[in-house]
Image (cartoon, rainbow, N blue to C red; front, side):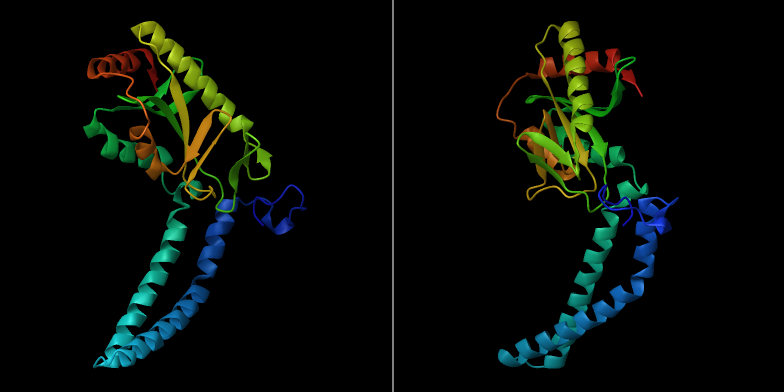
Length: 254
């Protein structure tokens, strides 16, 4: 398969084409099969609707059957559409930092949090989002892997597919430490920063969150909730404004 296993010899027909290109190609080619499957499911929905109508003595049983068929087809179409849409960042059709930034502002701005996008210390790694609020400070980057990539933690180690995730976690942890040192030095306020990675495509465990090697990986829609529900109140309003102002001044915009 595209982007296949390190233990399986690559098929020559995939050489020179990206996994994303093949994914979209197979998706388009499978459209007819999806339609046929949808017709079968709709027929099943029609039979179930008619059977239920007769079971409960309802009039116009065929109408209930048609309604059930329509709902079944609509649900099947939506699930197929959603499975394709959730790969948009991985396919390059959408930008992960735009999605996450919008979610953060929608959920956190009115609760006293400040969100700064695209920040970096000169000659060091940049980050997509810096969040400062009453419950602490976070840096958030965005990443996306192929839909079949398993992401998990075992024995305290992060795994992304068949590989260790240290190369993903370590730079973000080090960047968080560097940002914390700079903000603490410039403001005189003790700062500890929690690094997060918004995963736009890839298989996270049930619950949508993995924590390992100092990094939290989670679905973008869960980030604001995790930030709000942190079990502490670290900064008052004045400290939040001070940290945000210094961050905007000292951290280079990228």
